[in-house]
Image: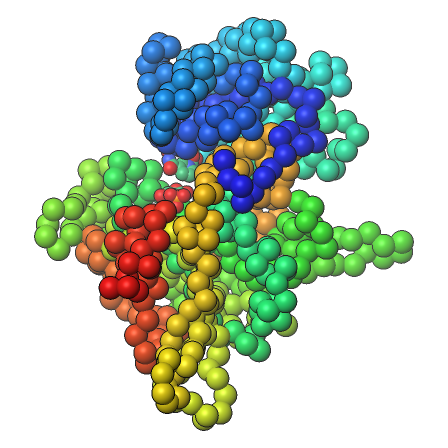
Length: 546
Ligand SMILES: NC(=O)C1=CN([C@@H]2O[C@H](COP(=O)(O)OP(=O)(O)OC[C@H]3O[C@@H](n4cnc5c(N)ncnc54)[C@H](OP(=O)(O)O)[C@@H]3O)[C@@H](O)[C@H]2O)C=CC1
Ligand SMILES: O=C1O[C@H](COP(=O)(O)O)[C@@H](O)[C@H](O)[C@H]1O
């Protein structure tokens, strides 16, 4: 594990040994992310070496098949890793059952109790790697059959819930109410007891190294802190691109579309960390107060309201949105979105979206925040691009604007585009960069997977990087009206070819909101496909010496 982040093991709950129960264990998320993350934590000794993992789903599987499912996406680099995997698999077991049958959850309970007796575990982490349609039946069954009071039985319960948290404001509130009736939102409200199960709403982007780095970049550097406002910044872009389409998930995706899949959650969470005011402290509630909604602060006589960043963002309007849907690749080899048989004929669901949001507060008034995301594009990347205003006056010509780029993935980096004197005689300006590329600066460090980091936080009882219900409410208020318009088929997505840069008009869209391409050509060296393919190896040196 990384020497960039050095989390403490079981901080706050060190007396608890957990049993982890993965519901939906037969699924895509469980095999691709949850089990590999649990293995990563186990391998690096962030999980107690006696932590048992129980899979639960409807599919019937014997132990060998389950072990194959658990290990399919686990990357083994050394012989020692192989031996560790064998030890890890001995801690994994599987139980099949329906999601709404008490008797099946009672069987699960028997199995958990056996495991607890054998291991001495006193805490349960339930991980719901399930489609949202079964969140409530499963949470209800768990509460009825598998929940114990800490005070009475000495068993601590935590529950991780995956996105999507609803389809719109109304359904998100309904889900929140129903879940809230079963489990708690917040441990801090019940400090003395620890007796109620607590919900952790996961948005895995909050576990990404560079997203977590935003707080430090912003609030631990005077040089950034003092220019992080409308006086200096012209526009901000937050971009998510994926090379793959909806392969295998078309049916699921069509219900949601790219805005609900990526923009309303991952990109908005990044925006709130880029734009929020400094929190009072790094405590979970102080950080989430700044990102989220209003919070009544008790004063002796009258309450005061702290107003927070998402509340300053009005709903997105039709003029500030651009949608796309991918078709076949230009060579015809890759299928278009509508070629997927699980996608309804003639679907208008967007697989690409660009939207501009404004934050009407003193810091950001007038600064466009452009969120862009799409599937089946030319490259994979997530980045935050903060573009500064033009240099005033006429001392120099042909200048490009300064930009701070935070490359979330791949090839984690922070680089600042800046003007420099071209070396040699004369006073010619040249665009260059201050480049903190992790592959060269921290090349002996391993960056933890987002899910490793977040599961560890949940085990440690740290809510800071999870989504609170009022944040969710604020997020849905921004998106629900435009989503209704889209769901009614009122905006036609612009077609784009699989593997292209996206729909025509994206360049004009960002230009309309102020993004300016400089006169001088600039390519961040690791931006190239070659750089991406060699993730972890710095291509710059080769490029510069060529
Ligand atoms: N896959 C991914 O990359 C990501 C997924 N997520 C979220 O994680 C959750 C799980 O995703 P994912 O693993 O892809 O989902 P899957 O479609 O693979 O579903 C997980 C399991 O749930 C059961 N299941 C599927 N459909 C239904 C249904 N209609 N009714 C009851 N049970 C069903 C199946 O198990 P069985 O039939 O054996 O019971 C399946 O193996 C979702 O909320 C998703 O949005 C979030 C981020 C990324
Ligand atoms: O939540 C989701 O995220 C993934 C992208 O995650 P990443 O960590 O690989 O960037 C996306 O593919 C998926 O559609 C979405 O549901």
